[in-house]
Amino acid sequence: AAWSCDYYEVDRVYAADGTYTQVMKGFLRDDLNIECDGSDPAYQEIYRLCWIFIAIWPIGVPIIYLLVLIPLRRSILEKRSTRSVRATAFLHREYDSSFFWWEPFYLVQRLLVVGFLQWIPSDTDRPFGLIRLTMGQVVALLYMIVLMFVKPYKRFDLGVLAISAQLSIVAIFYGASYIKLWDMLEMEDPGTTGTDSLTFKITGFTQSWTLSLLIFSFNVLSIVVFLAITV
Image (cartoon, rainbow, N blue to C red):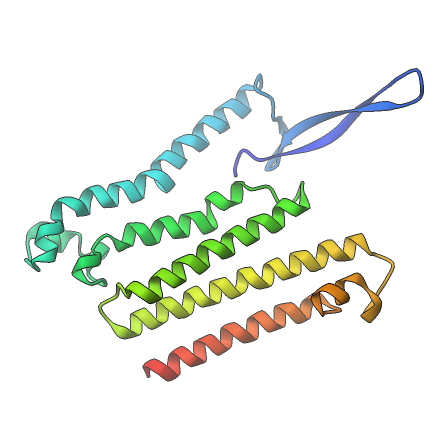
């Protein structure tokens, strides 16, 4: 998020027995001149602006789409070509009339995957980075399952393309989770390499680039299968 902060040790307070307490201070990740402090007016302004734009785009746009489509549902279901239906065709023309609301649903799914899940920390707390990837994979997988069962698209090739693209996203999340786990294990066992390493014993790979190659190959295969089905 734009208001994300990184925390650094700026001082140490020593006790009589020689132990010390770290004094941490947060700075805006995108501008280290701004302190993440409620008393800093610059940070307060950024925080307020972020929530305004969140209300406008990730929250507001799907709601606006629904508010536009719901009053037109009878005309869309009856396939009447009114002026309003034609003006909003970009929101519903690719879907069966009973799924005129699918575009806002699709948009919410995309916003969850690329937007709201970014609020889960990753760099400062490594296990939470793995949780973020896992949650993204779950959201993408659930959407793909729904897509396969309800089949909202009018055209068969668009349905196959949507499922293929979603399958690629699931594969990317799965591979990214595996790579994240591989990196975490490597940091826990830095002195061991090859088949004796902890990373190999748990993941079955000695290098993370082989995982990337596997993901890339799978996505290329998905494109080939899509072309074979539709062409």
